Image (cartoon, rainbow, N blue to C red; front, side, top):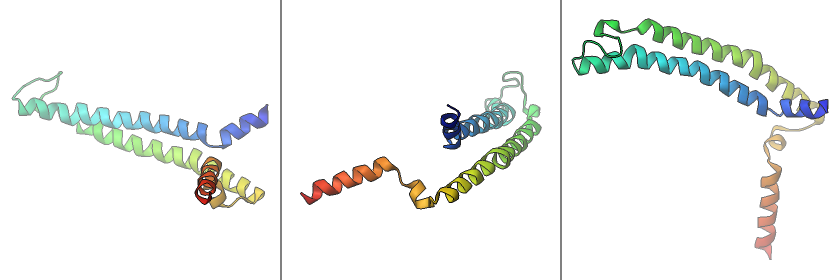
Length: 124
Protein backbone atom coordinates (compact mmCIF):
# COMPACT_ATOMS: atom_id res chain seq x y z
CA UNK A 1 0.00 0.00 0.00
CA UNK A 2 2.76 2.45 0.92
CA UNK A 3 4.81 1.50 -2.11
CA UNK A 4 1.86 2.41 -4.35
CA UNK A 5 1.54 5.78 -2.62
CA UNK A 6 5.29 6.35 -2.89
CA UNK A 7 5.18 5.55 -6.63
CA UNK A 8 2.22 7.91 -7.10
CA UNK A 9 4.02 10.79 -5.37
CA UNK A 10 7.40 10.22 -7.02
CA UNK A 11 5.95 9.95 -10.54
CA UNK A 12 5.53 13.69 -10.36
CA UNK A 13 1.79 13.98 -10.88
CA UNK A 14 1.11 15.18 -7.35
CA UNK A 15 4.16 17.43 -7.25
CA UNK A 16 3.37 19.00 -10.63
CA UNK A 17 -0.20 19.67 -9.59
CA UNK A 18 0.82 21.15 -6.23
CA UNK A 19 3.38 23.41 -7.88
CA UNK A 20 0.80 24.54 -10.44
CA UNK A 21 -1.72 25.41 -7.72
CA UNK A 22 0.78 27.42 -5.68
CA UNK A 23 2.21 29.25 -8.69
CA UNK A 24 -1.31 29.92 -9.95
CA UNK A 25 -2.31 31.45 -6.63
CA UNK A 26 0.78 33.65 -6.57
CA UNK A 27 0.27 34.72 -10.19
CA UNK A 28 -3.37 35.52 -9.39
CA UNK A 29 -2.11 38.13 -6.92
CA UNK A 30 0.04 39.69 -9.65
CA UNK A 31 -2.88 39.90 -12.08
CA UNK A 32 -5.20 41.31 -9.39
CA UNK A 33 -2.67 43.98 -8.47
CA UNK A 34 -2.14 44.99 -12.10
CA UNK A 35 -5.86 45.23 -12.76
CA UNK A 36 -6.70 47.05 -9.53
CA UNK A 37 -3.59 49.21 -9.33
CA UNK A 38 -2.99 50.17 -12.96
CA UNK A 39 -5.68 49.21 -15.43
CA UNK A 40 -8.76 50.29 -13.50
CA UNK A 41 -7.42 53.80 -12.78
CA UNK A 42 -6.20 54.11 -16.38
CA UNK A 43 -9.66 53.23 -17.69
CA UNK A 44 -11.21 55.71 -15.29
CA UNK A 45 -8.84 58.42 -16.54
CA UNK A 46 -9.52 57.61 -20.20
CA UNK A 47 -13.24 58.15 -19.60
CA UNK A 48 -12.64 61.26 -17.47
CA UNK A 49 -14.18 59.53 -14.49
CA UNK A 50 -13.07 60.82 -11.13
CA UNK A 51 -13.95 57.60 -9.38
CA UNK A 52 -14.02 54.08 -10.78
CA UNK A 53 -14.66 51.53 -8.06
CA UNK A 54 -13.27 53.91 -5.46
CA UNK A 55 -10.08 54.82 -7.34
CA UNK A 56 -8.98 58.10 -8.86
CA UNK A 57 -6.14 59.02 -11.21
CA UNK A 58 -3.97 59.87 -8.23
CA UNK A 59 -4.86 56.47 -6.85
CA UNK A 60 -2.43 54.48 -8.97
CA UNK A 61 -1.42 51.74 -6.58
CA UNK A 62 1.87 50.80 -8.20
CA UNK A 63 3.28 49.71 -4.86
CA UNK A 64 0.84 46.82 -4.66
CA UNK A 65 1.82 45.74 -8.19
CA UNK A 66 5.51 45.73 -7.30
CA UNK A 67 4.80 43.88 -4.05
CA UNK A 68 2.73 41.25 -5.88
CA UNK A 69 5.45 40.69 -8.48
CA UNK A 70 8.13 40.34 -5.80
CA UNK A 71 5.88 37.95 -3.89
CA UNK A 72 5.31 35.87 -7.04
CA UNK A 73 9.06 35.62 -7.74
CA UNK A 74 9.76 34.65 -4.13
CA UNK A 75 7.04 31.99 -4.09
CA UNK A 76 8.15 30.59 -7.45
CA UNK A 77 11.77 30.47 -6.26
CA UNK A 78 10.84 28.81 -2.98
CA UNK A 79 8.71 26.20 -4.74
CA UNK A 80 11.47 25.48 -7.21
CA UNK A 81 14.28 25.16 -4.66
CA UNK A 82 12.25 23.42 -1.94
CA UNK A 83 10.04 21.08 -4.01
CA UNK A 84 10.99 20.81 -7.69
CA UNK A 85 14.80 20.61 -7.48
CA UNK A 86 14.84 17.98 -4.69
CA UNK A 87 12.20 15.88 -6.50
CA UNK A 88 14.21 16.03 -9.74
CA UNK A 89 17.30 14.97 -7.79
CA UNK A 90 15.44 12.03 -6.23
CA UNK A 91 14.10 10.93 -9.61
CA UNK A 92 17.59 11.14 -11.14
CA UNK A 93 19.02 9.06 -8.26
CA UNK A 94 16.26 6.48 -8.64
CA UNK A 95 16.82 6.27 -12.39
CA UNK A 96 20.59 5.95 -11.95
CA UNK A 97 20.05 3.16 -9.42
CA UNK A 98 17.70 1.37 -11.84
CA UNK A 99 19.91 2.07 -14.85
CA UNK A 100 17.26 4.08 -16.69
CA UNK A 101 18.55 6.68 -19.15
CA UNK A 102 16.76 9.95 -19.86
CA UNK A 103 15.75 8.70 -23.31
CA UNK A 104 14.19 5.58 -21.83
CA UNK A 105 12.37 7.61 -19.20
CA UNK A 106 11.01 10.03 -21.79
CA UNK A 107 9.78 7.25 -24.07
CA UNK A 108 6.09 6.64 -23.43
CA UNK A 109 5.35 2.90 -23.64
CA UNK A 110 2.00 3.59 -25.31
CA UNK A 111 3.69 5.64 -28.04
CA UNK A 112 6.25 2.89 -28.57
CA UNK A 113 3.48 0.28 -28.86
CA UNK A 114 1.49 2.38 -31.31
CA UNK A 115 4.63 2.97 -33.39
CA UNK A 116 5.30 -0.76 -33.43
CA UNK A 117 1.71 -1.47 -34.55
CA UNK A 118 1.95 1.19 -37.27
CA UNK A 119 5.24 -0.22 -38.56
CA UNK A 120 3.84 -3.74 -38.53
CA UNK A 121 0.78 -2.69 -40.52
CA UNK A 122 2.95 -0.78 -43.00
CA UNK A 123 5.11 -3.85 -43.61
CA UNK A 124 2.12 -6.03 -44.54
